[in-house]
Amino acid sequence: RMKIGSGRRAKPREIYFADMLQYDPESGNERRVRRVPAPTRCEYIIRFAATRLRSFYVGDQAWWRSKSRAYFDGLREVVDAKPLPSARDENRQKSMFYKLSEHWAFVTTSVLMILASSLFLWLDADLNEDISGIQLQWLFDLAENVFAAYFTMEV
Image 1 (cartoon, one colour):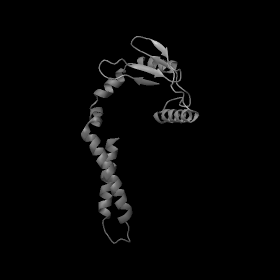
Image 2 (cartoon, helix red, strand yellow):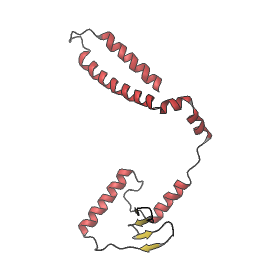
Image 3 (tube, one colour):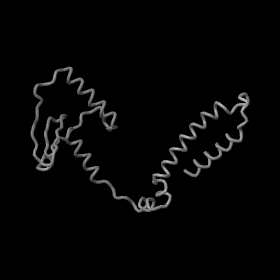
Image 4 (cartoon, one colour):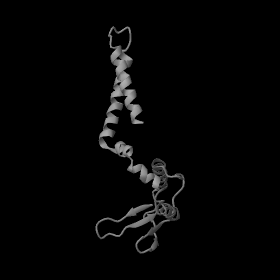
């Protein structure tokens, strides 16, 4: 399937290569299409493999099958029949904790704490040994407790 049409006055059309069909969603007109010149066997195999790979990559349910117009019409019905958000979802979004977790400062702080924790684990593995002669055990204990407290509060 491919959507074509651009510009302000262009009419979008959908082309379904599995059915070799062009469909105009505004008027409902359909017409058969053909490839000129006909693809060689090598081009057909490359196109077939590329289509399946892309379908697999984007997570299509039946990526191994060619998709017809009926398949995409079924998807439209599912999307159009999307349920309205429940009262539980609306109340959750009004929550102070939900607003806090979506705030840019909280997200940024969380990412920075994860990076700092990763860096600290690397330093801890290299320096926190009795052999190194560096007496920084209290610093490692303090940092571990700070990270544990922050990540517990974050959850």
